Amino acid sequence: METLHISIYVLGMLVVLALIFDFMNGFHDSANSIATVVSTGVLKPQHAVAMAAFFNFIAIFVVNMKVAQTIGKGTIDPNIVDHYVIFGALVGAISWNLITWYYGIPSSSSHALIGGLVGAAVAKAGTGSLISGGLLKTVAFIVVAPLLGFALGSIIMLIVAWVFVKATPRKVDGLFRKLQLVSAAAYSLGHGGNDAQKTMGIIWMLLIAAGYVNAADAHPPAWVIISCYAAIAFGTLFGGWRIVKTMGQKITKLKPVGGFCAETGGAMTLLMSSAFGIPVSTTHTITGAIVGVGASQKASAVRWGVAGNIVWAWIFTIPASAFMAAVAWWIGTHIM
Image (cartoon, rainbow, N blue to C red; front, side, top):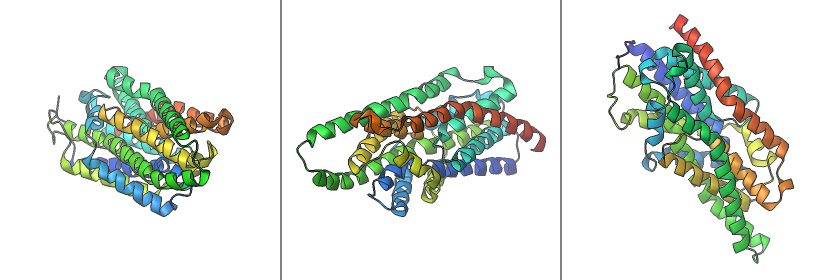
């Protein structure tokens, strides 16, 4: 692999841009971590985002680096990576995140980044620059992650309903208000562990291309790991409030017991995916779990029209961010 020759200033600018994306990932996706616990009234918004941000960062000590390896080495050919490709990928992903945040659409920051990488790589070197194995695994989980979240959310809801069938509603509500603190923390842990590593993978890819890091290294440098976890936690602390209402109440009305089941199912999906190095969408996962909880009670409890609109956003995320990234790549070649 030929070493990329870029100035330290351009390298620094791209690292900062990547951390801005990471911050926006936390900002955009904080709704995924806190929407259920806020909507059920278990925590006030400011307390919920503080807890979510804390567990986003704590994931640094719990989750392995396999997702970063998939992004950094398993999506596009390392030989075509340069500062223009990274610039295009990040600008494309950030642009799509801003659009969906503005309109309150819970789309995937993860897939916006994947789309950005694909768009910039194809703009530079055609489809032959894509690594099919890593991309197919990611694309497959656009379907698998929400289905797994749906299945786990509904199964946990049914088990809870069976176990507490003789308990009074007041007792159930009181118990699950406490348990939802645990499930929300677990989901935030999974969110931080999976999503922060996507930005790590981008910075790692850039450092390898620029010759600052050995491609044989098993992990990115410690400063990359710490800064990425800190950036996503800081973004979560600010919170993307426009999306909270859609996630927490528009899909289905949640009570603490439902919030616990949705968060637990979502957390299990995220932590399992991270263990296997699969960069999944936290948005898709929690949406599937919320729909599963609602559907396990009765089909009419789910507002299928709202859920359908969210699915359309999922479908458009990768191609839309890829298109924006291709345009950004072209602009980058003229201004950098």
